[in-house]
Length: 224
Image (cartoon, rainbow, N blue to C red):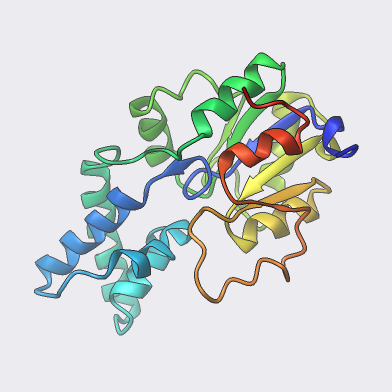
């Protein structure tokens, strides 16, 4: 807990950590499968790939697609997803309370995601989150994406906080790798889109959160 009290900023992954985008991602994927006369994928299975973006989703839904067809399917999926971007997506239960508490205690927060800006921006607007983060680093903000540390370092600079005084929260191994390379403490959002093969113990994060609200005691903030 002593290390946690040095945290001056919290950076969140987006899909699977801050926002539950699975309903719209999976709905779009199954709409694409329906266009291809295929049965819908089971929700629990498809959920494990949401944090891996369009690439992970198409690999799951169309494992035999050759590279050319893969790109065509991915483009069609993204078109379907963009049309229903925030139809059923919402903050994970407890995240609204966490963000309010961070702001109340003067702790900066931001978003670092591999989701491209043309999807990230409209999603945040739809959820009325676009004005609140101190920074938003999307997957195409920089030449590098997670697991490269530069997006996290870029966010720390934007918030004027040393990397070691930031905390990153994410639900994929790439998040932990990026944070470690950036010398940031990191927590696994185990409520996110983890699959049965994800061994979070081996990721060697600083801890894991069973719910978003678990972040508050980690930061030394009392939950009302």
